[in-house]
Image (tube, rainbow over all chains, first blue to last red; front, side, top):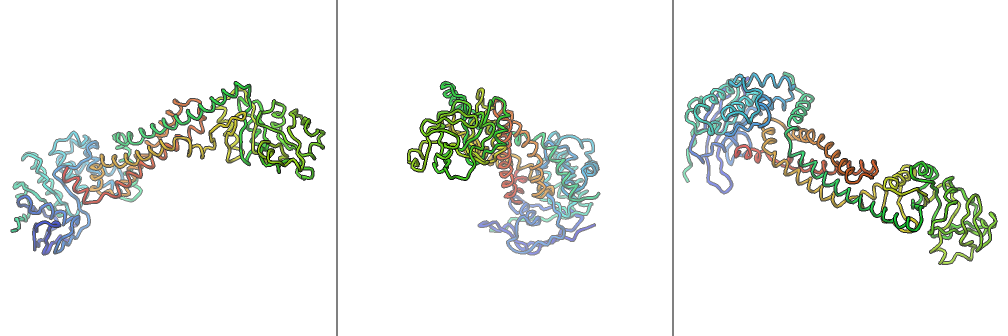
Length: 203
Length: 356
């Protein structure tokens, strides 16, 4: 089930008293696809993610978001360190009111999807950075979001560890979500369906 | 997979149960202040009890063994019977003590004479407490056969000398100031006289609790053989006025701030939960579920602490103090946590995780 596309039209934003980060930006983020936001630091990649999330309001223009369920993936995996990997993955399902046992079973399956079936019962604090980030991606899968906003998900990882993240994000998109990734990682960007490059605004 | 609010709540509770073992901050936040409170309470208790023992020592030195309890308008025969059942109490009775001479028996007063309890009759056979003066109205003196100025109260079994027989002209200011009056009493007495073997803190509390339980209100130990004891023993009054209210208030404030700090320390965890789909009600439920066992632990700590510091403290008072300390501490900690949770904005939470 694909949600409606997320559209931004004539979008412009600047923080109070600051310069414009971008203006007159229009784009459609297609469900089931991955889009990479690239560009130098300070061009507003993370800000655009926050605008898509609704955490920030546009200075001008509009964001039309079809699905309500959004989830974030950060540079740091944001796991609960003393819970097991499958409990971390199960969190969105627990919040949705699914039975604990079903949540854990499903979480194990999501972990298998990202290639981490063998660490399901390990506490998150004992996982490597790459493993922890993949657990976080599995949690995104479990949340079954309409929109996944990934902010530099591979920035803290080496190339070897980053590769499975790319595959895992692809898996989230294949589940029907719109995946938007702000990244400096060219390899990750190259695996995305579309690339939106933000350029510095002339002052 | 089916979902409903009930299973969400049970999931949240399981989650809370699993995190409880690792929530050392909470344990510190709740138990430590309550332990401090119990220390304060126990110190206060010990202090006021020391006063009683000290006064008792003075009374013992004078050869007294009669405790006079003032219970304004609220001691009845049932209370006296309860007092007589307390260990260490030889006998207990009640009379009305007043400085108002108008309550003395008057010749034409229709109120029946000397309706006193059995305990009172026993007490009247003891040596009279030095604070107790006996004033009879002339009508009563005539009826029971005593003479003004020299009379001895004979009936029914008492042998106390009568200090004054007051007729109408005897209502002079001196009397109103200095004489306590035995008056007919048809139900309620305002003073109890208790003869005891040896006063101990536990006995004193038992006496007071017997009065509370049966008479209901405004009971206080007033004088011990005429020496005022500055101690209010109505549980509500005492807990509010003497039992470490200031330490409790300070500890409550500490708990409130600790609640805020606890959330601050666990902010990342609750932010992760928020971004995993747990709404504010679910997050608050997790906190409450974690707090309940700790509340019980806090009360137990207070109970044990108070018991250790003040072994003679009446168990009912001990429990009251512990529950009060535990409830205040836990409630204020939770209030602090709720304030912290409800005021956390999504944008701030986003920053927490992004800057992690």
